Image (cartoon, one colour):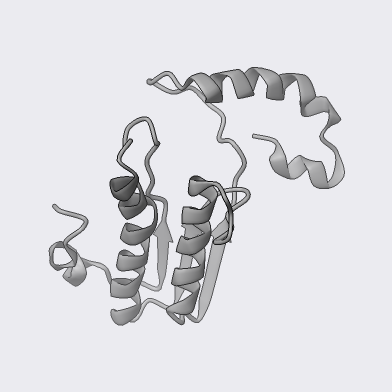
Length: 135
């Protein structure tokens, strides 16, 4: 199935709710255009098809700091994805913006690994609104 070709899934994308949790990493997808295609274009395209098929509600995994005006490519792409899905006109649209997602991974991510170690040190200090940045 080619997820970038709506014809391969249009007939199957019928429901009350759509959950979007696609994504990649810059390490796995170093080409910026392909990265944007996966992080932004694919979720928006799937959402369009679902809306056309009568889906009323969409829930998409985004990222903490998502902002269409961000200077950072990752946050900007996620913010643009949120903005563009919201513009489609679903009855309800929700965007979950998790901080760094914890847990074991098969691949090594140097920055993420270092951040997790740092995070363990500061987690006890994260109270109130700062809890939002905890993994």
